[in-house]
Image (tube, rainbow, N blue to C red):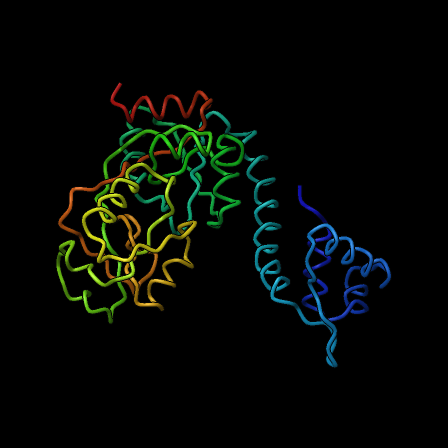
Length: 294
């Protein structure tokens, strides 16, 4: 399910040498070297540099090391989930969960559905937020993950090739670091944002966000809009470290404990609900039907 060269890469990184990795893997050192060379060639990046102490990871290597552990663990867990699904396939809905897509908002919906679907079971499937993961997970809903809770609109659904059921509209809020000049306010006006860097998802990500962006550019040029590419923990860290203001929704308030979420005196909202496959399973269809009140 994944490139076995990744496992070799992890062992080499942990051992700090090709020879020690070969001993751990019970293969020859040239075979280990060949696998790493092939991996570097296929990725187009250098993963290791030689030092007087042995091998050291490059910055690209450090990034891949962190992600590889997740990829391998995720694949192993996927196989286990597939086995269990064979036994309980008609009763389990798999919910994808991450810091940016918490499953908690679905708990109330599940309680509602459970009354009419008493045999229904939920399984939490953790995943990491990255551009690649977001694209692949939403495009392939129904494979390893059935549903994800999150914000969306028609543009996003079309881009990610999935469907959505709106549960509520979330007000667009602002997040600031605890030491920010606005942190003590209970509510913000648009004028409070004058002179601030306002971190927003890039144009084209959501029509709802683009409406707010257009309003700011047209009527409030004193606010400096700064684009970014994806909501993940890094952008919350950037907000805290840079002292900038981040556009958020209330359901993300637990992502970063050092940020304060503050409502704003504007009427901008964004739909929040359940993302699911455009061709959902019968169980997911029944689940959605109950949530719709049918």
